[in-house]
Image (cartoon, rainbow, N blue to C red; front, side, top):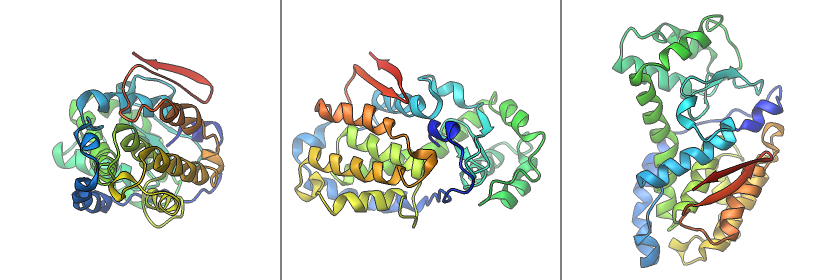
Length: 278
């Protein structure tokens, strides 16, 4: 969920649908990277540890107004966007299924954990903004669980499985370097994937109608501009996402500078706040 969600609550937004099958589709599509230029294929991807750390900080600047993404394991609140509780390092939501999947994973690994007893309630509230069965204890228990390294690792693993790995795989399949892979990741974090017109796959589809990615013989900068145009369109369809500064004064800044490898130092703004990674 974007930080803008926390500033502009809406009553009934379209549900963010996360389809983890994207990972399999994107991974299967990796054969397309063979069509990318040799120089691009040799570039360091977003899955390089240093690049990934940069990506986590960039997303955290938008999601939490902080570069300290590891401080967000304990974060939880209802931001009034119709998705119930938003929590953790990537904005897992009680109303969109990804929080349920996270707590299931944690419970599989650590039976009897402090959140396990909320699984029936999380199943009931999936697809709604209801707190039924979660209040009053769930937020405090989430913060308690966040002190457990097993829960922190579960958050990391679900972030990677549902968002990061599929985005990087799809980006590589399209012949994109680290900046493009990040643009995919940030879009997938905010919009999820599914059949909704504003879902990631449809943002990408909108971009493909006006530009080709490098794997299809297109110019990388032109394609990324088209993708970011499509992303801005999708954001403006929902009031809670209508502040597009995480694209306009961050990703577009890097693109205008030709920083397709997302090399540091980086300077950007989100929602008027300035950030720097040296």
